[in-house]
Length: 147
Image: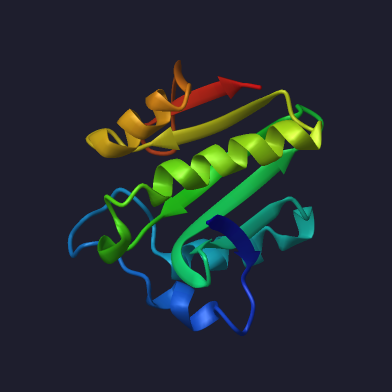
């Protein structure tokens, strides 16, 4: 069962140890992501999470909410190589969609992916995200899902 847990002393080392394949540049490292979450902590709307399957951390996700716009941004999703191609990404995004919808705080979700990351694009499209036509963050393609 996929669920999310805040980053704590108990899971910090496991999250930091998660790595993408050597040379792959689609997703920033978890160390960099945690530094960004710390940098933007005063805004209070950036939250890093460990993605768990049952009691095992299998991935990392960072969310950013814009309550004025009623938007939840899936800022970062990362699974290390040993946890790829097992459905965890699809399940995690489905769970975020479910939780966002149930919260009543959001009208839509936004995310983006690096050109060439066809696996991510396929997962996002399969779950209902559609390109907005915007290119953001150094050439990444923005996608949106209405709730």
